Image (tube, rainbow, N blue to C red; front, side, top):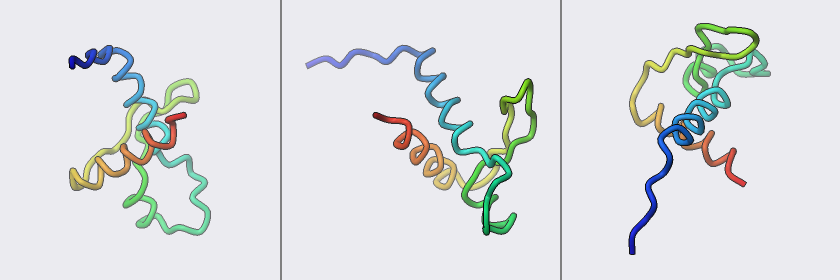
Length: 76
């Protein structure tokens, strides 16, 4: 059984959307800045109301977990 390869542009778009969804909007409620930094990507550059650059530093497993959670939330 062969599996069709995903379209690279669609995959990039999904990942970019997931990163934007996992980026702090500034409305973290009761969490501290430190808690927010551990659980959300931090925006660095906004352009025309859209995040175009984020701070992704941190342990790879944490970054993967944040992305995975955002991708799961966007799935139908």
